[in-house]
Image (cartoon, rainbow, N blue to C red):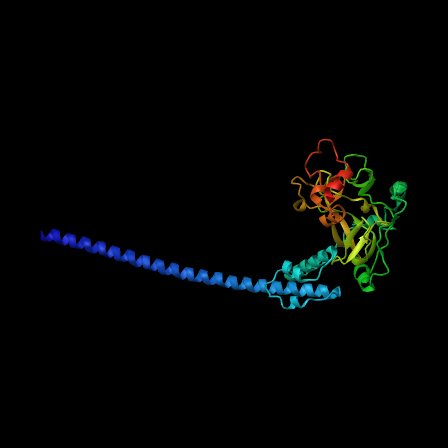
Amino acid sequence: MKSQFKKQQKQKEKQNRKSRKRKLSQQSDNSQSKQQNVEVSKKIDNRVVENTTTNDAASTSVINHVIQWLEKRKKPIPDRIDQAPSSIELEQIMRLLPPLKERERRALLRFVEKAMKQKEDPGKEKKIEFQDSDGEYDIDSKHSHDEEKLNSKRGTWPANVEFSNSYRWDASVPSEIKTKYSKTVRKRAATFSRKVYFKKITDENHPAFGEFGLYCSLKHAKPGQWLLDYVGHVTMGEDQNKKSDYVSDFGENSELACDADTYGNEARFLNDFRNTGRHPNVEFNLRRDKNGELRQGVYVKQKKDSKDAEFDGIKQHEELLVSYGKSYWRSRVGNLTDFVWRLPGHPMPEGGKPPMNDIHERAQS
C-alpha cells in the first residue's frame, strides 16, 4: 500500500511540475506578445507621426505653389489661403480662390502637379528628345529631294491657312517667355510630313464627314512614337481667339495658346475620337528639340495609357484620333452625355449617324 501511495504522489508531483512549466511558458509567451504589440504600436505611431508630418509638409508646399502661381499671373492672393491649416487639400484651396477661367484652372492644377513631382525627385531632369525627330524638316537635309513629291498635295491645302512647321509668336508675348521656350530656333522646311497624310473624310457616318482627317503613312507606328508637332500662332492664354476651334494649350504651365486656325501644319486636321466608335490613339506631349525649343508633339499613345486593351500602335492608313477634352465640347454643345451617340467599341446605331441638328438640340436642351 505504501509503495502504491508513493507512486501516486510521484505522479502528482510530475503532473504539477508539468502544469507549472506550461503556466510559465504561457506567461513568457504572453509577455513576449505584449512586448511585440508595444513595439508594433510604437512603429505604427511613428508611421502615423511621419505620415502626418509628410502630409502637412506636402499641403504647405501645395499652398506655396498656388501662391507662386497667383503671383506670376499677378492675381490677388486671398487672406484665407495664408490662414488655411497645413492639412488643407488642393481641392479645398481651389475653393478659396477667386473665380478662375477653365483654362486658368487647368493651368494652375498642372503647375502644382509639376512642382510637386519636381520636389519628389529634384535630381530628375526633364526629358529632352535628341533623336532625329523632326530632321525631315531640315532645309539642308538629305531628304530635300522629296520636297516636290511631298508637296504634290499642296493644291488640297486650305487656301486661308498659311502652312508652316515653325511657330509664329505674337508680338504681345513677353520677350522673357518667348526666350524661355524658343531661344534658339532651327529652320524648318515648309513641307509635309512623311509619317502622316491628310484627306477628306468620305464616310457619311463619321462625325467629321466632309472635313479633313489625319492618317498614318507608316506601316506601323509604335506606342510612344513621335509623329509630328502641332504648330500654330502662339499667344498668351488670355489673348487666344475664343472663336477658333484649333486652339491647344501651350507652355510648361499652359500659360500660352497655340492656334492653328489660319497658320500651322497638317496636325490641325486631327479629329476628336468621340462618336467614331474608337478610342483615341494619339496624344499631345510637350517636348524639346535638340536646340531646346519647346514643341507640342503628337505621340502615339502608350499601351498603358490606352483604354483599348488590344492597342499596339497605329496601322498604316488608320486615322489618328485625339481627345479634345471635355471642356472643349461642353463650351460648344453643353450636355456632353447627350452629345455622344456612339461609344468606343460600340457598333453604329441602327439608322446610322443621327442628324447634327438633333444632336445639338438634345445636348443643349
